[in-house]
Image 1 (cartoon, rainbow, N blue to C red):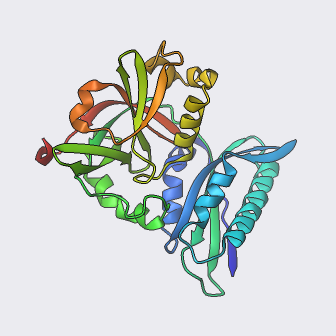
Image 2 (cartoon, helix red, strand yellow; image 1 turned 45 degrees about the vertical axis):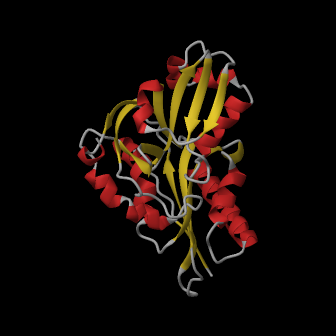
Length: 285
């Protein structure tokens, strides 16, 4: 069993692009496996912190040959070693994007079984985006598993999107309705206002890979954490004055019902974008 730890530390504009592209480039160099991308913080005077650590450890264990215990223990060792090293050597950088990969199958003795890359986190400055709709039935075969195969499978879909689009929303057909599931690298949410009630609508968890940002959002809504809600400019501007009259609806939004939406949002570990335009393929019009 091999354990490889890769540490990437970049500066300037390269850091910004690597926040998004670094994990993907890293994954494409490795055999098929399970991976997760997480946020972590280092401080010379404190222990490193990882956002939703248990969620990421559980995700790494899905769909691989190794035992859950080994995956968790090695992942914790990898995070501890990497973040402690970075906290001492790069004290000026406090926030990191970390991608951890675990081999899907048993590896030869001289091959890595787990690998990780640490990239300085740079928050996305962009707050709005345009999206395109992928043809129905294009999507993950196992949405509950963060499989590296999906990273390569989605490349043709990414390349086919219009130049103005920043993300592609996956869809499936249900009779006359085009149901919208998730983005290639984001979760998709719509906000509606009906009979005095605000509704956050997003696809059921068994159809999409529910990211940590999505889980955090749903947790804050369910627990009525309005301080967090109002601290995010995208949500505060979009749902101004919603108070506590809000609920979550776990069903896939229909493209044909977009006229009922107050707003549509895509979000991931490093971005929350308000959708300003939707590009629809000609065959779906």
